[in-house]
Image (cartoon, rainbow, N blue to C red; front, side, top):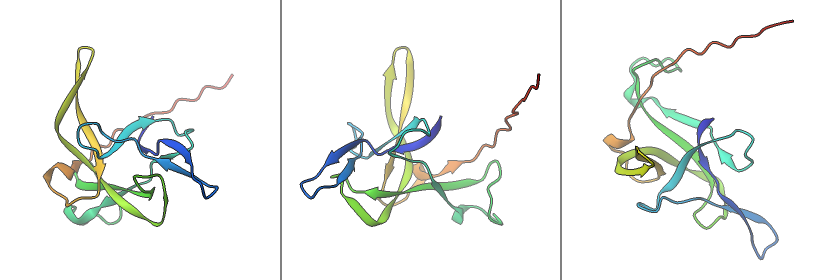
Length: 134
């Protein structure tokens, strides 16, 4: 499971091609961000990093770096293809929701002016992969 932007439902247009309609946050109408499977066909997960907040980044991120995360969208809000795409930035804000006994904070993508809620602290986690042979 990886963080990505769900392109949503495919939609047939009168012109004979398909477009994709993004899922929108019911509270802010921004693009929904979700964890999803890499096998999903219409999922954008190629995140870009804005190194403006990182000193001496040398082309990579380290733990505790502060950065902005962006993803390039190739479909507009109506599901139409956008030739050169549009960048949207990952944003966290104070809107919370509850599922069962758990409370979560909403995270969305937007194309508005960047602010403090658009800054993310990188935490690198080492994951070991074990292989056994018989």
